[in-house]
Image 1 (tube, rainbow, N blue to C red):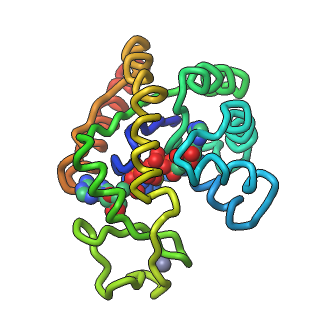
Image 2 (image 1 turned 120 degrees about the horizontal axis):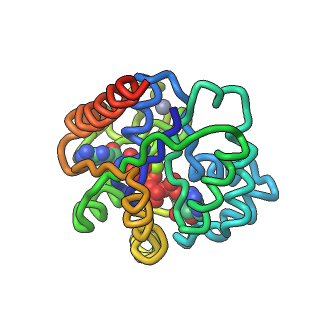
Length: 223
Ligand code: AP5
Ligand code: MG
Ligand code: ZN
């Protein structure tokens, strides 16, 4: 199973990706997480990508595509994988089809999580991340039990460097110009399913499972 999760910054891609991969036993690939790990480890890729990410800009297509190409060839992707935050441009989407073709894989589902911009701003500026295990919280919508402390590992919570107002504004502008066109792109290929991402996270997950479940049933009927 190969799934693409589309959606603007703050739509809940990361939140839902965790649920989906654990239910279906597939691998979660977040290009944003890969970059953040390199930034933390101060690798050459981290130094390069950090310059773009901290300003809320996209990392150049060539760099991102080559990372994805290598990542999906790893053995934990054999059973299937979910892309969170990739593709983000038409060039990436075209390249992704080619990568899948040469790996003998097919894109099964594209799920777009739809949320209005006003809500995205609140979600991004209120998000807090655990510095130890990476778990994600929100000061209002998903508060930790103890302020600034992770529920799972007691690590300290922090704000992502690209969740500042300036970077968020850039990210949303870039989303509209470069990523939103992918909605029509995948609609044209009859792969797009839209989910209302404004419900609570459990309801959003239930709706995603219904879409995936129905599509899986269809596949079985064809066989
Ligand atoms: P990336 O890490 O992918 O960030 P993003 O797409 O901007 O999305 P976020 O991770 O901010 O949001 P999310 O949709 O995962 O929402 P979350 O679940 O956390 O990319 C970061 C950067 O890396 C990019 O800007 C770019 O520079 C670079 N990059 C990455 N991929 C790239 C690519 N392909 N090409 C080029 N550059 C690339 O939820 C957000 C908050 O809302 C949380 O606090 C959460 O608790 C809360 N929340 C979630 N769901 C709900 C709900 N249903 N109701 C209420 N609150 C909710
Ligand atoms: Mg995310
Ligand atoms: Zn933690």
